[in-house]
Length: 227
Image 1 (cartoon, rainbow, N blue to C red):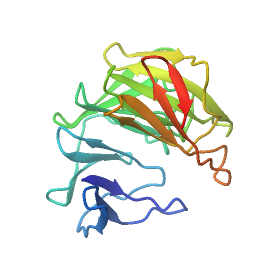
Image 2: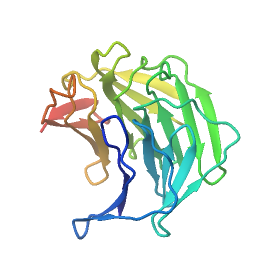
Image 3: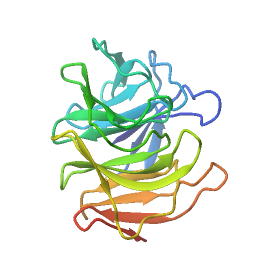
């Protein structure tokens, strides 16, 4: 089951909670008595070890799909909220990594959240990707790396650089594949465990010019290929 907390994509987020069952290809809206007040651009990611959807709104919340309930967490320290940041689960180390977002500065500012200990930890990864929002990141389970592609600069310029982040060494490396997708933001990326590749879809230079293309990235060969 995949859990989705929705956002209106306009001026105000939708106060709705939905679950999707892949086996039955069906969506179900879930009624809730208590839930976080989502801000536009809220980041959320699924912690598969704890079976919780973790959302960061400036506050940290955890959603339990089995109990259909949200729980507000109370970590001692928290990152500054940045709209449209990237939030991805590191399954090797069982933690969630928060990157980028509006007004959050460069991506050398890396935060990791441990649900089991309700703990945010900040790391300075040194030189890394420039400040951006509307980026996309996926965790490559084959190599234990986070792969980031593109996004929009603070001046609203579309980027098309590819980066790898190693949580174990806290180090960014810019990858320079021979071929790269066109510059874009607002795209989506996910790791395909069967092929061992990362799949990217859509995005564009602005909301009125979305692409309908799909690309595959193979970290082993450092290669992007259009599908």
